[in-house]
Length: 178
Image (tube, rainbow, N blue to C red; front, side, top):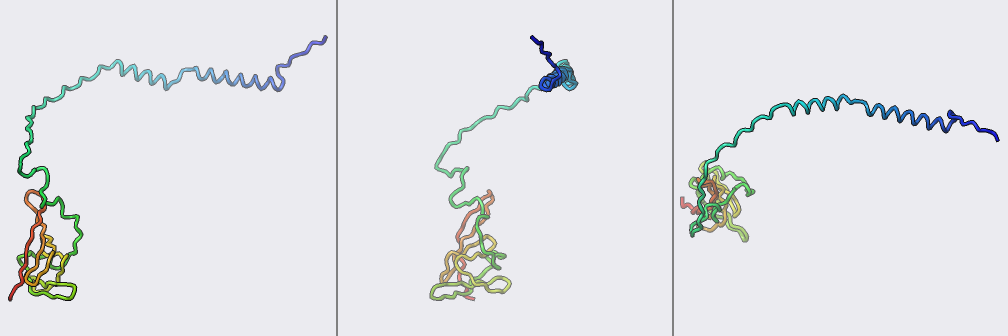
């Protein structure tokens, strides 16, 4: 019987040998000391050795007396009344020449009626005469013309209140005989 020689350095065995050698080298490198881990361990050791800082005591708060709000028949001060608006900026209004004057400075000087429309003529202090129709705005307080009659002009003004709201009031501009 012939003995077979086992060749270690044959091609398939050589590949296995090289792979195991590379794996051994990586394992040895991976098990070596890591300088970053050492630095982290040193930092944690320093933090543990330091004394913790004392925390300041919380400030003393004063006791507050609470009062129960009692509902009565009076207007609720936390809600706007029905005639006071929160804001006047939500209206889109047509700015006309009469918006520069106070209502008291304006005069209704005439009326023009057609089959479908009624216009009023309003004189400004500068002598100009303006034609207005329902929906027009006149006066500094955003007075919207609501109704035109042969003898007067009815408008709804939005006036700013001292307590911070807006209140709608009705005013009439009477036809002048001058």
